Length: 583
Image (cartoon, rainbow, N blue to C red; front, side):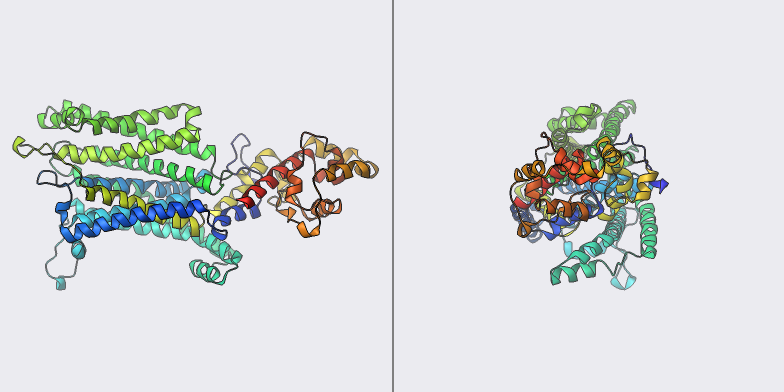
């Protein structure tokens, strides 16, 4: 048990003195309970936007690529911009899951599940654009290496466009397997709790017969490490290969060796910003503040600040090299970006991606949830502009002034892009409704080392055994120690009159209104029976406790298991339960 020991100076990763049972309840509640009205409203909006995008795609396929704003000079524009943007967003999930798993970072456990889901859905959206860009989506299989019976071998293996096909399909398959493997133990937990036959059958199939035996856990941990080892190089290789779409050309502004590391840093940058956006909304909507709190937000903001700084250095390096190379075409490409017709896109990119992340150096700002939410949106906007600046502003000024042109997006361009955002949120909302949004069993694995009960030395909850309390040198609060050592049986029960007055102030209740008080942290069957004997049956009564008044009659009656601090904690938990029930 000593291996669970963690320095008390570290802030807890699980707040609220949670027990194993409470963790299960909190994570399963969005799945087992009725979805709030807000969920239905958001789902309807996302579905309408997604359907509009699908309609635009069908119109494009029926009419032709001419419905986009492309021309002979600018043959890549919003389509490839959106493709690179979505692939970048998909990088944070695998980084959080794989790289941080290999480095044994515990804080990843509260955000990895949703980040992995975000990766899958973002790659789905990214894959749409190259397929649409082909114009003839029904012959998309031509990009794959086919047996000679199908005719000539069409793919050009010297083209990075074909490398994209292999890189992204490999990345998607490994990420999908990694995500699903992690879900299996949690599906089994939901299966065992399910009451409706349909839900029980569905989660039984999804859990693949998981029983929680030691051999299964051993294999689960082994395969997780193997998949993390496979996924880690993919994080760096996939966006490097995407950057080769540009870097292997001879077009000024693209033909540069800095693209691979610069694209990878930018992908992690935008991916973490999207994770922040989704996590901040989800923690509020599903009341997961105890599991996704300021410390997690701060850690992610530090990653955003670091990768944003790398991206800023890359921008400055590009500017320096374009001047130092002495190639006038290269120099003009960057002068045109900053001062040409698309200057507004370039400076929006610089402001959003270089300036805004540097504000994270201030602890007060990087721990502010409102500021983080705004910066995350700003970064995602800035990263879209970065991809547009790289593609649009580079192509619109060719070697020959006679071929110079401008790109103006049509309503189909805009509709398809906005539609993919709608489809992304449709998938994500369905995920939050039917899948556990937190890694349930992984959070339980850190409860004994990073939970607030352990940090506070108040490990008198079912999550801790007597031996673990002894090994952790748990110190009981002074009120509990004094009451257990200095009082006698005669002093332990106060006058019935004082206790009766206190209980009457909480309101009358009987057996018919009885709540399961054992759901409260540290309140076992014995304490519940004691409370029932004096007429305290419900959460509503405990919520009415006046913690500023003298509660000594009640604390003395309950003994060492019911000190002032415990009563205050029970009051807060009871208020939360009543609030959740009302909602």
